Amino acid sequence: MFQQLPIPFLILSFLTILSALYVVTSKNPVHSVLALIFTFFTISAHYVLLNAQFLAVVNLIVYAGAIMVLFLFVLMLLNLSKDTEPVKSNWWGIAAAISAGSLLLIITAAFQVSGEAIAKNPVEGIGLVKALGKVLFTRFVVPFELTGILFLAAMVGAVLLGKREKNNAVLIPKEERSDS
Amino acid sequence: MSLLNIFNQVEISHYIYLSTVLFAIGLFGVLFRRNAIILLMCIELMLNAVNLLFTAFSTYMGDSDGQIFVFFIMVVAAAEAAVGLAILVLVYRNTRKTDVSFLDQLKG
Image (cartoon, rainbow over all chains, first blue to last red; front, top):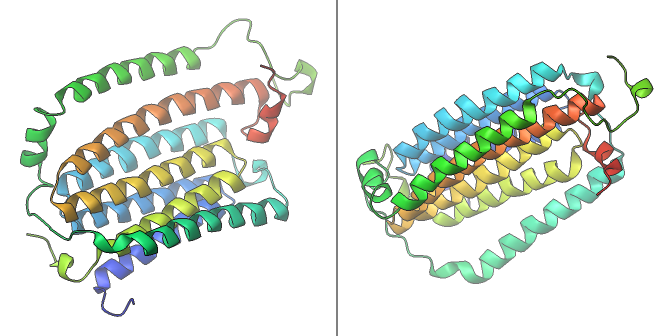
């Protein structure tokens, strides 16, 4: 099944799955973030293979550049390290593995039943900025403008949540806190 | 023109399997981990699995709507990460933990 696949695709897929596994299994959150950045890089490489050059660049800028840097900042702001990582019993791991494995099995089986009739009709040049911009600013111009409102709402919400208030309602009593 | 003539060698089914595996890994992380930051990261991983599948279908079907949809998913993911991390910082400020199991003390 895998012998006729081109080597770059195999290597990229292998790296993607391996680094994704490292994201969920690593005990250190900083290692998880770095592994996730690496996963995004490999997914960007997949986009290049798929002729989606614009998405490859946007994926790098938005995910690896902005979102993951935000994650890293919060991680370092909260000063989390290996010893603050909560531990779960093995039963949780087994139950989670069974659930995720069941989902994998079901989707794969469903595809095996119904996936034969997919057309294979590649068209060149649809992943470039020119083609995508034409579609984005004609047919999808209303959703594109609405994303501006969404960003404004998200920005206001984030600032409002992050603002420190004088009499903050606390979830735990003051004497149980470790510091402050 | 692609770097490789990949369409003659890679079926769309391989991308479906790859995305499914990535999505399952993300789901496993959401169920298994308790650190809220890792949970958000696993959600990003699941979103990326869906993005990859959208792009694969878009390219193989020769229709650019899928790639526009991926663009919007990225926008929503960015907004979600910003608000989610702000909530996380707020929770940490109140409880000194990022353990999501601690939040079962919330009363509605």
